[in-house]
Image (tube, rainbow, N blue to C red; front, side):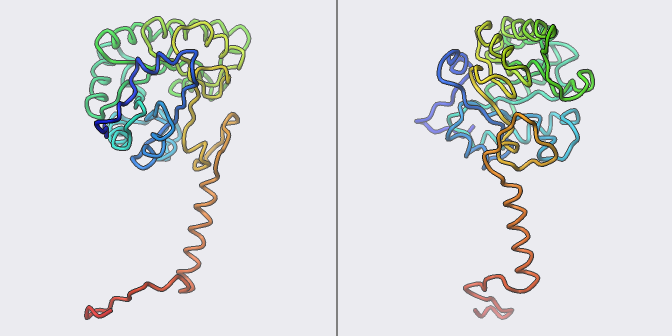
Length: 274
């Protein structure tokens, strides 16, 4: 990771210690330039498997590979100095057994320099989380809407409504008790997110959840208005970069077609004259 002698990157213990304190600022990043921008203001930068959808045009996160995560993790690491880097474990890399999860988590951390891994799932993943933590791999949990399970969840639906709230709460408790240093709560009702935040001992990081969470995270391409395939209802767009870029490209194309683009200061000829 790009780290100077005077800058200490945040770690899992630092994030965990923020429980109930100043809200944690978190964003995803997939490239070095964006990581540098996020590092200025973020406590945690997630190399999310959302990269498959927002950068590679995949229909879901299910086709994301270890190689893709490593490639983007290495790029993000080059742009960070202060923020903690967490990297997603892709679908199929950890569900089979704790041993499988350890092999792949160890590879992700060794080849990217990430400070932790994130994996999806509640109570059924508690054993795996405990196994990883006991072997020196910090783990961030992720409950509620878990995008890698959209086929069993019936799509990108709110989780924890009505009687289902107890299940999501139990999932969060199991993940925290297994040793996760923080838990992402995705697309759960505000009252439930607040209840979980008050109940578990580690920070909650909301995405489409309550402002009462200990922190918030967004997919950076969503909040910048770069990803237009669909727009989650809970996302506030802080910029409209896709439309700005489209206008800029159209202006450039028009100038080229009409030969109206600005003349270069020096025009180079075949014989080397200017």
